[in-house]
Length: 169
Image 1 (cartoon, rainbow, N blue to C red):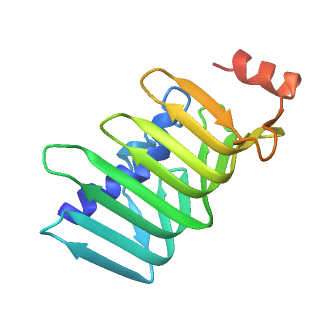
Image 2 (image 1 turned 120 degrees about the horizontal axis):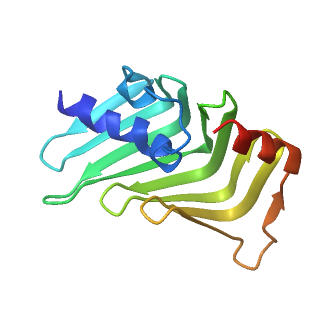
């Protein structure tokens, strides 16, 4: 039971950042976790899924090499996923998918703060943002993309596709 509750947190991690547009009912769907191995440390409140982790919940699909969910006493969970890369997809209410990826993903449920690190990308149809680091403050609905001076942040917006999304709200 404890594992399932912590797993639910990871599955909702990405959908929370897009909750205003996410496919209704995704977070009410069963969470399916498929991994090569799983370990649970009850004393330290840590659950680890590894070896090609695949998580689905409704239209949400997450793939990672390893997912670690930690709960510190008196605090909400943090979720760390790593892979080459970690990928996720979710269908929005308008039927269009949103895709994201990064070499690592960190989500602090207490602060409601998502961080994609290393070759980070968020994409909807042909519009996208690429950077070394993308952060999203769920409460404030603020996104920030930075590249640490090594490269440039690249953004491509397709106006016709963005207008279609606005009309269908």
